[in-house]
Length: 339
Image (cartoon, rainbow, N blue to C red):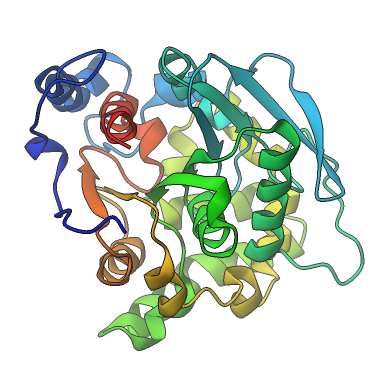
């Protein structure tokens, strides 16, 4: 079991040199991430959107290949050699959102980014009565790892992708080497956390329910805007470049299915006891400016995930790998180098 690790922030990485660069160099790169945002297009008034990074992340990637996993065809891209790393995207995203990670990680790893069920470029129609369930997505990820023969793999997840990684590690630990978790939306956990019901209620009233209603009414752009602004920060959608907005609109049908799914099914009953049984090394990533709903969940998850390391990504909110890719990449590569 990976015990004995302490919480840390991006500003306190220390230790011996790794194979490719010292941790001191990694620290310098990570700390430089905040300053670099100004040079790459981030707004001075809002550190939540790095326009240049978002445009690159949302731009077309190499033509995806497809793999049959759990009876569904999933699009993916792959590059590099070495220990496998699989990137699992969050809501309103797809494999294109990892454009700023594929190159740097492929220098050291067999790097795979795939699109989850219902997301571009996959067939996105749900069958009658089908729900958006983390358990189903975890089964898809297991099928992908097995079909590509890349297990055990480092699983790096953002938002709902992090929840998918947690379920996979709990259910099929033999497929997972380590976990990197970017604010998994364990919304059902908030009922047993001090102030949690109020935090969840505020998120539901300001974000989840208005987005659900707009999407159900066919007002797709309003639904996407409401969800993104609530999950990341006010004004986020309108600050995004057109390529990133297009990617999210293309994945809006999946968002409609998400928000219409009961939370118990959406989270797939992943419990604190399930978290406590996970023995794989884990890194929890929290955005400096992430909404209270995600920070509260991260704090609670850290109490139950044995020995998890923690890093706060400076000048970022819920989508850290796009808002501050330099700091994000440095922190994750540092973690993977020792696991």
